[in-house]
Length: 165
Image 1 (tube, rainbow, N blue to C red):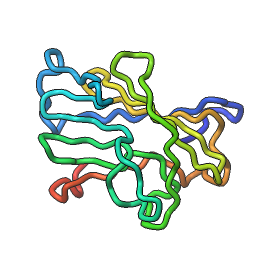
Image 2 (cartoon, rainbow, N blue to C red):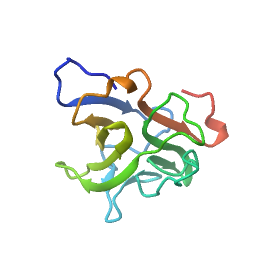
Image 3 (tube, rainbow, N blue to C red):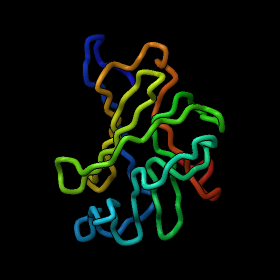
């Protein structure tokens, strides 16, 4: 997460997660749709945004944030802002404030905070051009103490996917 200008009040990091190696169903006939349970789903693919909470002590438990389930296998988890490039068991975890629908019909937004680090942010997720658009949006510039440390963390599971791009 980087400021684009020193006076920027709204900062965003965009990450397009393309599923080129996942062979999705034809996105023209089976796009990701928002379900009544606030999941983005299509045939064989489910995207969850903070449906589970981090454990208050063991923040690296691999069961929260932005989760991707492909053909009944959770392949990615912990999609969230963390305060080190490789977060560990005892590293701070954000407090989840809420999840809501966005302006577009298939958009989810989670609001989180690191209160002791003066860092409030939103994670905005929506389908876009056959991919998943993930944006981290800060209302205030990133605190200087977190520059070069804070970033969007993704963890890929199961082990069959370790070392894959």
